[in-house]
Length: 191
Image 1 (cartoon, rainbow, N blue to C red):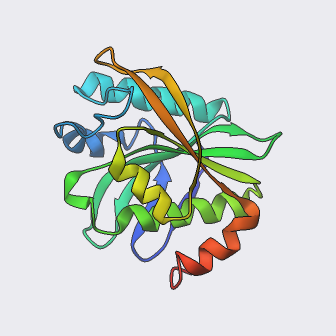
Image 2: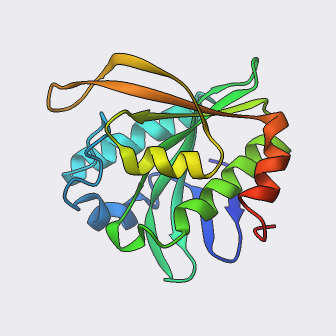
């Protein structure tokens, strides 16, 4: 994997791969960490499969997975990724995000979302960033709304969860022409 790193004084996002994912093994064991995800990250074999899928998607140029390092706490916090990358239509999804409970509510998520949005719009020159969130996951939905995501619709019963439940997925988006206003209004002081 080539080197790609997004970083500010609070967080460092480095490519997730087979050489660093084990830093997440303890966090991956936290109860209900990915309750609203259709993917399993524990036990360790499941985490390895999850990471291998992310690495394969990177190789196929459909995802860019990151391991999250909290620079203030000097600890690995979880992972996130750009996924479902559509270079032709200039649309990318941000998601597959999970961070340990010790890092939740610390502002870390907002810091990394800023870096990812900035990279998507200003470096990759994409026209749209999307977020797909389980309708029941109010905490994540509110977090995306706070950073300027607009609810565009709900895909009803579109994703099969590990427990057999068929979830509905909320689709949020941020357009390139909205980014400058969001950058100033929501992320003021981040640059």
